[in-house]
Image: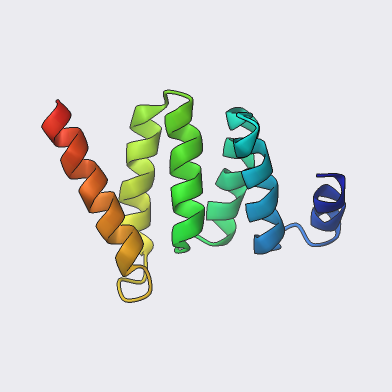
Length: 102
């Protein structure tokens, strides 16, 4: 993580480094830290499906259901519908499952 943080000091919007750093926090169940990194990532790349899913999962793992669901809405509004077809389909499936559970 030190190398990634050093890299982000020089290039703070470097998407691969943000993905890797956030992912390293997430894998260690450091969800608050992952959320912070992934929030930055969605601000840098608002239409990137990987960023949205990562941010959604970091929020969801912390029990932040409403903000996580708002992230789906935010992403759906800005996503390139052709490039992000799979992410949009995955989100639709998730929303249907959640609706069925309630």
